[in-house]
Image (cartoon, rainbow, N blue to C red; front, side, top):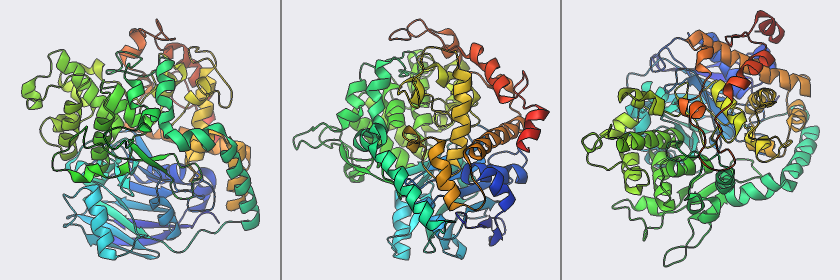
Length: 615
């Protein structure tokens, strides 16, 4: 119960689709989604495999609570070896696709091999078949979605697809479902494109059974009430989305600005959640049209937005004048503060392109920011950029580069490498604000010390969603800690990492943790799933998952030396704000973190730790 106990194995080389039973022993140890799929991947591929070779595998995985009546039960993840990083990749998405896949009767789909020609997978409950996608190849995510809906004439069909970026090998291409929800980071879309797999279209009518229906519904109702009464999940996120953070993080001096050369952005107020509500133009229309919820969600933090065509003219692109997925905090930061651009419509337009062609706006914006610094240093020239003046603050340059990167053309082909490879190409690797090849997001490690340790130790490269210590250090959830202190942060990061790994494996959304703790998760899992699920078991599952991911990366060639930050974070002190004069205290935090993890001085799990976790 909870699990459908069935996976679909798709061999793209042979063109076959076969059902097989889910390994329930593994499910008991890894729960689902992130954890369970990582176990399958670790058992089935060589961690040293080239991410873009047919020998890599791509897994779409749901959790046991995906598709149930629990709040935020929309989530699914894509697990593979990441094209951008070469590390374990697990990219999480919401919308409606994940629930539809689960209700079609599948816990996960494993893609292996490579098709000779472009194909998509069509699933209708138990029926699964590979279909030629030659008419879809070269189309954007939006076009492919519309074409598949026209073909099957089913408004409840859910589509997850890659755009041109994934087809053309942009290393941080993502997989977009429901047109503007994305498995966004680490290059999972590039892996999908390398397999000549364009899309999955799914329709499910089977529902999801749970172990104790009455007990489950009672527990779910209680937990929904907790979300509704919480200031963040009941008010802040529905009203402003994650963009509620823009002014907050700027004020505490932790908003990386102009390739993290600064920690505060003078234009933050112009691109904030509050600004998205303000009337503008002759018709007085705000950027934000409405909020939107994913399947089963009672928070509704999603944004639906529009470009003001009077202010920001998009020649021959009328589709961008309508409504689509709007800015959230991370992409508003990466496209805005990090590049110095404070034009809300330009950021919205660039974000639409990221959705349309399927590439990660965090890595894209951070890579453009690094390119802008190189341009202002004279290292990158107009000859390189095709005549575009790639200056900090240029909205025109930002949107021009978004168009080029989405098609992998011109200088967009260089930007499509990500900042690590681009900066190495131009002889300045120190200007890439990345860890393990992945760009860090919208929290400066000098102003929020826990996030420095979070980025450095994240198994998928720099990531805020592996250990959101901002909750504690800035928002006081579950308790307030000093963002400028290093003491106690090793334990805080480990606790957040283990808890997050467990939450990501349930099928529910991490944003619920603004209101819920694992004490709220385990009763829902226990009522839905066979076996006995306690708080201690859920904590252990999270720790087991984290160490399994670490083992994968070590086998792939990563070492403790990769648990570091860009020199700018370690050497160049913050110039303004509460963190003025501060650098990241990573060197003080990392040894304690290794010790708490049960790892040796080189960051390798000890035999005792592996034995305790059954690894």
